[in-house]
Image 1: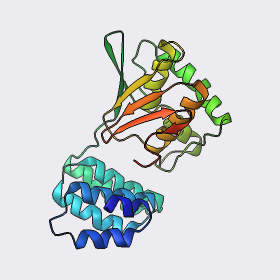
Image 2 (image 1 turned 90 degrees about the horizontal axis):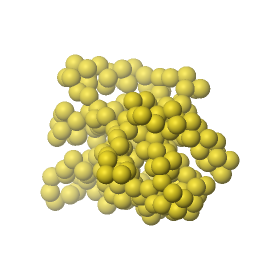
Image 3 (image 1 turned 90 degrees about the vertical axis):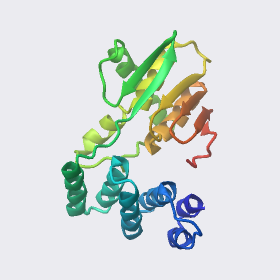
Image 4 (image 1 turned 180 degrees about the vertical axis):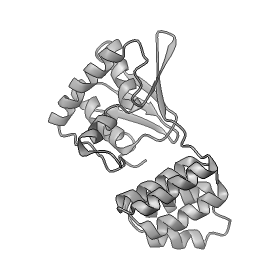
Length: 229
């Protein structure tokens, strides 16, 4: 219910629902609230949800980063610095995201921006061409979650996300029509989710991504989650 109300923009109702719960709200509840506050750029309720999360899970870096992103979107750079200093002081780090794909009985794992894979040059060259194709089909990069870098670096960072690298590897090494299966240890980011829809459209491939929440089945430019994840 909190996720449903929050994503619909009914943040006050979502927070009221939390306050009236007959049991103590858990991490998932406040996490859904914090995520909704990022989507709808609500700093005040985001801070309140984050405070609860920090009490429940003080060592979880993801929630600290999410709050910092909310501040950054609102150009509250002093508070961004405060969160980052708090993380540094407590030794808190965000769990690094990675994506993996099975191919010929081997697991190939990709991290954002990583170039250690034997096919890295081929993967990045193919991905560059693929990004151009999906842009022609209507894809627009979402740089809202990237801060503290110059504008011309935004897209470069997005284009090296682990999901895109893993999908490119799968497309290069399988026959046309083969379904691509990807596993992601974290939640798929909004930009990669949107990009994968367009990739499934222009390549005429089915792409299945299993992230930390659910399966996403991309086909013909549409995801099975209905863009609700």
